[in-house]
Image 1 (tube, one colour):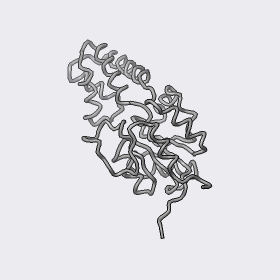
Image 2 (spheres, one colour):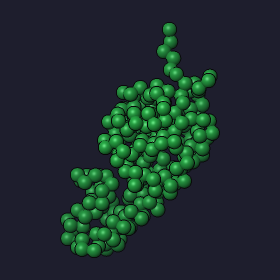
Image 3 (cartoon, rainbow, N blue to C red):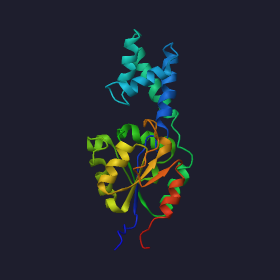
Image 4 (cartoon, rainbow, N blue to C red):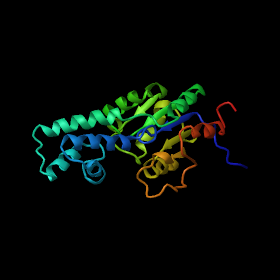
Length: 230
């Protein structure tokens, strides 16, 4: 007797670094901030977003950077934050093949959703800037569920919203720890978006059901799986 999996009806996506290069946009924004402050170490500023307790998206990282270099935060901090937010959003664009792939997936009739650790106030403008908002039936953000991945709650909330079971769903994400591993525990099939993984020491992770190096490779995977009604 074979273990036949049910047809796929839904695709869930991580957002940052899966649909677009958030890290690249952050680095570009940091470059603009340090130039405004009269410095030239944008990579140094970005390292604060990676290695401080404030969090990956917190502008408190900019405050700490300024304070440790004895740069006055009086008035300049608020302007630095404005520049950072403006430039980060300006530099966000979809990875090659993302728009075409999402359009094809919608035309194939799949339910779709986003599961992201970003706050809704950040996620909506980013999707809008990329022109991707219309491709998704739901979006689960950190402020909706109050926990971040790899907790199961964000994934289960998205599945409940689009009324899909784990075993008939696929999740596409760039983080083995926060995307792939929790989904496998839930029984969701997984696609490792290796092209967007900026934080693993190596990209030879083999724990996902599938691996892609471009988003448009997803279409071949989806077309090769049993579909509803087949």
